[in-house]
Length: 335
Image (cartoon, rainbow, N blue to C red; front, side):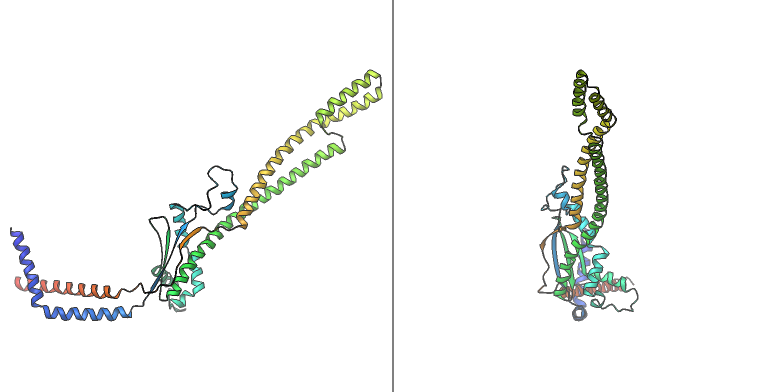
């Protein structure tokens, strides 16, 4: 009960203060409104443009279309998930994109940063953070928001940031793809040389030593030698024996070389596939995003909201004034 009486007493005191000091409070409120209105008019207007896009699940064309590894041939039309959205945000926040936009739109001049100004780069970065934001939405899309004093420039910058995203990501991936392509190309050329040496060796055995098909030749020459010996034709038998000796000397090597050559050809086919896939990754460019909404020039300003500035200024001024008056009255009463 005592607490309730105290609350009522405080309420009456506040009302009494407002009634007693109504005229000064009204004048103070009007001054606050006029001052905040003038200040809000001095604040530079800014217009906002927005780009909304989804990340692609993958932009490796060879892996998506040609790989036989289970789960690796993802659909090029599939939207990316949280990981891809976070990667996109990281690239959007990179120095490279900010530097490209700075060069394209001469942001130092655009943001009125003097050439001889101290910490001009730091000031530019702060202006960039104040005017350009990237955020991930609840739907796993990424939103680019750009504020600028010119509605056209805001839209141009937002769209160019989205465009630069592909070129920056492509540049990073191509650096890696080119190195992979060089490695595969060297191995592919080495494999071609190895096969050429083996084929030349087989050709030598065939043309010079007469080793064609070891097993068939041995079987046929053995039969011919037996027939020659039965007929008593020793010279023919001796000649056939010399051929058999040559087959015995080189035949095993020819068989092993022929089998090895088949394996090397299989390896060459695999390398050829990797070679062509890596070449696709170097030569082709696939967009890494799906643009849902492109930026367009805003028809009305986004900042500042002048009525809100005036309302907040008047409310805070009156609140502080009432608090000061209450303290003053209570101190006088206590004394």
